[in-house]
Image (tube, one colour):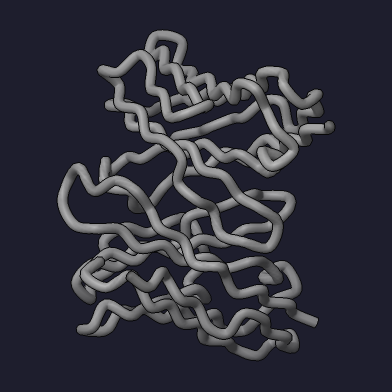
Length: 113
Length: 114
């Protein structure tokens, strides 16, 4: 079965630094992988999608890389701010349609000023 | 346009009872997926409905069921509630066809079973 693992479970960084989150998966191909942000008590909000033929995707201060050989995606937030504090989830998208997503357990990021 | 709406936001039920949760997707979206979120297991996929038909199903017992109406609104039902069913239940809607890959989530229904 498909498995997805996120590391670390929790990450504490100083404002202005770069946060790097890891997502590893098994038994999944072809690969669409999505990243979401979730704030306490709220539903996840879509951030970025990366496809298997894309090595890197950027959106403002966010950058996602994808290595299908290693079966790994890295999620970076540069120049982090306290407002970036949240749980970040990666998800496999087996139907390539944003449905029936398989989520990791998330990384909870805390950015201190 | 209006987002995904879930009702009710909070619910307290007793073991053995059943519960029905509702989800109204974004206008024009025909796919609705349901998820259960708990601290221990994270976000887990329950099932997906598309055009009133269950299209995908996760690994949950038969006590969890759902349906979708012609206006794309969806309901999920949990029968014979157990303490372990306490969770945040989220639904998400998506547009049709490949390329519409973003899932839009509602705020969830927090179910507590006592």
